[in-house]
Image 1: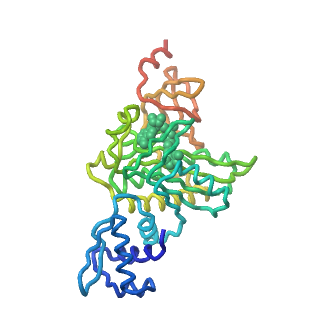
Image 2 (image 1 turned 90 degrees about the vertical axis):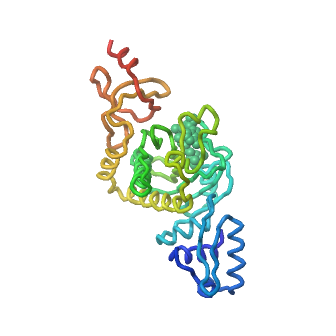
Image 3 (image 1 turned 135 degrees about the vertical axis):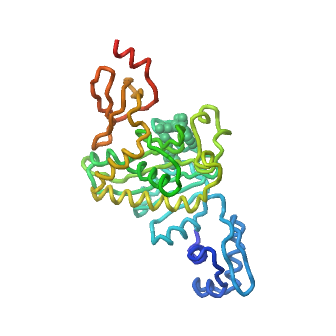
Length: 336
Ligand code: BT5
C-alpha cells in the first residue's frame, strides 16, 4: 500500500462528483503534476478509471472490482479511521497470517484482508471456500483486557453488528444463524471464526475471522457447498462496490469490538438479537460432537448460549453446536 496513492484517492473521494485539479493534488501530495499523472496511470492499471478534463482536473469514474488496499484506506480516512490494514492479494488463511503477525510482534489492533485464501478454514477443521471472485476474507486482531469467560458472546455480537450494517445501509435482509453463520434468504452468505490465545485468567490475543461472499456467483461452486451458499450480489442482482463496503465492515467491526470491551453492549446485544435472529421461534435440531437435540428456539442468554425448549417442555442451554432447521420427526421421537 502506498501512502501517496491513499492521499490522492482520498482527495478524489472527498468531492466525488467534482473534478480535482492536478495542481491541487500535486500540492497536497508534495509531488509534481507529472508525478500525479504517472500515479493515476499506475492506479488505472489496478482497475481504476479516471475522467480527465483539461483545465478542470480528474475525478474517479470507476473503482476496481477487486479489493484494493489504497482505496480501502482512502475510504477509511474519509471516516477518520486510522486502523492498520495489511492486504494480501492471496494468502493461506487470514487468521493464520494474523497469528504469524502477532508472533512477530505487530501492534494491535490491525486487520488482515485478502482477495483469496488457499487454506481458508472454518470450525473443527472444516474448509472455507475462498476463491478469487470478489469476496472478502478478513481477520480483525485485538487484545482485549478481559477474562476469557467474558468473551463468550463476542462472535455473536460481531455478527449482529455486521447484520445491522447489511440491513440498515445496504438494505440486505441478512440474519444471524447461531452460532456463527450469516444467512441471506436461508443460504449461508458469511461465516465467522473467532480464535484466541488465552492465559489462565486473561485473554492474550483475539482473532475474529470473517469470510463474506460479496460478488461471487456461488452457483458455480463445488456441489457440496453450492446449494446452501449465496453471495450478496447473487441475491440483489448487481455487484456491490467492494472496497467501500470493506471499509464500512472494518469501521463497524472495530467499533463493535470497542463497545464490547468497554462492557456496555448488553442492551444493544439483545435488541439486535431480537431483530436479526434467523432462528426466532423456529424448530431446530442442534448437533454437538456427542449429542443431538431438537426443540424450539426460545432465545439466548447473556453468554450467547442458545435456549431451546424440547417437546417435553424441558429447557436446554446450548453453548456449541450445528443447527439445522426443521425437526418434526425427531421431535415426535423425543415425545414418544
Ligand atoms: C465457518 O465455519 O463458517 C467460519 C468460516 C470463517 C472463514 C473466515 S475467512 C477469513 C478467516 N480466515 C480463515 O481461514 N477463516 C476465516 P463453519 O461453521 O465450520 O462452516 C464451514 C462450512 O460452511 C463448510 O463445511 C461448508 O459447508 C460451508 N462453506 C464453506 N465455504 C463457504 C462459503 N464460501 N460460503 C458459504 N458456505 C461455505
